[in-house]
Structures are given as structure tokens and as C-alpha cells.
Length: 315
Ligand code: NAD
Image (cartoon, rainbow, N blue to C red; front, side, top):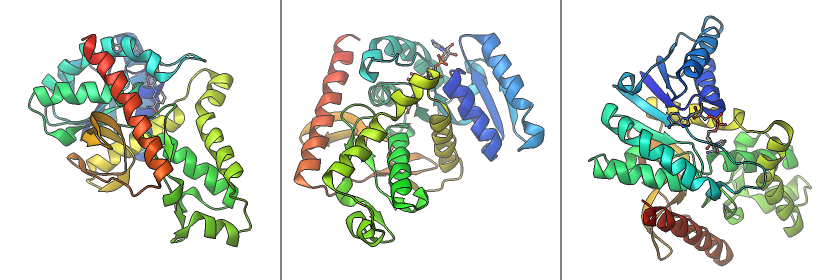
């Protein structure tokens, strides 16, 4: 089972390393405009193979993506401190205008997973190019708020003193400033978070919840302040999504994908709970939110619609 990765910078390389450590796939092909970098990353990661799982890791060109089951798009630039993900748009849209047609032509049976920011808008762009090339609607998705959801569960798990695997709660909407914490739907041990927190004598007041939100929102900035970029978390997210697709796991994840209309906002791409399997996105679920959460999600959809419209105007 071949996995292609376009962009072998920090995110693409860490995704490849996570795949090897977890034994996901059989062959990884790294493509980058900087060929010596792709070759160096492939060689370095292949030296971890004797200590992990039998995957073949190599650098290649677009033609080497043929027969890939999954292609991860990690090429482009990242945000600098103080810059929003949406400000990256025009630079990374130009990169995608170059790479996406080549991926679509070489790997028509793959599921394409976008990681490059702004991930929602670039997933929208990739999906519309894929649709025009005759691809199935579910075949393109983005990592979306999967990482934000993981951070949310992890902070809640720490506060409640439990393993985050047992926290069920999602961040939806934009992977960015307008993301929405679906507090009303968080459950632990089959009970609403408020009840579980009371039993554990953990304060979950409005103030405590705002504190959790800002800890999750500040996570990327805090990491970048210490070491310039984030890649371990997203590398693991991408390996996980790849495993879900390769093994047709039918997992529920907050990936982003296009939706015809959400809360009166037409033709937008954002994260919602989605069923993901071997063919990509199988089904999208519209959660039952409170009035306030619904208003926040509508706002997030409008922010993204405006960014998509801006991109479409300049294409
Ligand atoms: P990086 O600069 O380390 O790597 C980017 C790579 O893309 C480089 O190797 C570069 O040569 C390659 N590239 C650029 N243009 C190309 C082209 N036209 N064709 C082929 N290759 C090309 O950056 P990074 O830290 O790996 O981040 C990559 C992207 O991932 C950024 O947009 C960043 O914001 C995003 N990211 C997303 C998430 C998420 O949750 N979705 C998290 C972290 C980073």
C-alpha cells in the first residue's frame, strides 16, 4: 500500500516518520521541489525501518505517485508569529495550483489529505479541482480541526485527571481563529462533562471553560515561540488519518471537507464530525448545538466562505 507525500518539509517528514513508527502502509514516496531534501529525508527515515516496521521509504517525482492509496499534501509555507493562517492563502494557493493537477493526474484512485494551511480553503480548492477532473466527492479531505480536537481532549483529560482517549468532545468549524468548541456535546464515561466534572470535583465554570479554549487556541503560538514550527502533533494526525483510510477503519473525526450548505452559508469547507473510511469521507454529521454554538459555527462558515470567495475572485 503506497502513500505519497508532497512536501517533505517538517510536516511531511514527520508524517512519514510517524507512518514508519506505527507501521502504516508498505511504501512511502516523498515528492518535493527541493529534491535533495526529499532524498535526505527518505534516507534518514529509512534508517529507522530496522527498528520499527518494514516500509520502503524513497524520494520520487509525481509519476512515482501512481497507485498511491493516500496522498498527503504538506507543501507550502507556514505562518510566521503574528500572521493568521488565512494570510497565507495567496502564497499557498499558488503552490497548490502547481501541485494538485499533477497529483490528480498521477494518482486518480487515491484519497487526498490536505495539511497545508489555511487547510480549509486549500481543501476547498483541491476538492473543486478534483471534482472538475471527475473524482468522487469524498476523495478529498483536510486534517481540519483534528489537531484542535486532539488538543481540546488532551487539555480536558489533564484537568479531569483522565486519559484523553476517554474524553468525547470536538472542535469544529475553521482550523483557525473562528473555531468552535462544541461544549454542550462533550461527554465522559457516557455522561455530560458538567456532571463528570462534579463527580471528580473539577471546576468547569464558564471561566474555566474559557481558560481551556484559550489554552487550546494558544497551543500553536506557544509551540512556535519555543521552536518556530509545529509538526509532531500534525505528523501523528496525518499518520492516523492515513491508517483510517488504508484499513477502512470507519472512524469519526473532525476532518474538513466541502459541504453544499451549512446554516444558510453555501458551498463552504470546514470541519464537522465525519465518518471516514477507505474511500475517504463517507458521511458528514451536523451536530445538535446550542443557540450560541450554532451562531459561532455560522460565523466560522461565513469567515471561510469569504476567504474562498476571495480566492475564487483571484483565480
Ligand atoms: P516547511 O517549510 O518545513 O516545508 C514545506 C515544504 O514544501 C518544503 O520542503 C518545500 O520545498 C515544499 N514545497 C514548497 N513549494 C512546493 C512546490 N511548489 N512543490 C513541491 N514542494 C514544495 O513547512 P512545514 O512546517 O512542513 O509546513 C507545511 C505546511 O503545513 C504549512 O502550510 C503549515 O502551515 C502547515 N501546517 C498545518 C497544520 C495543520 O494542522 N493542518 C499544522 C502544522 C503545519
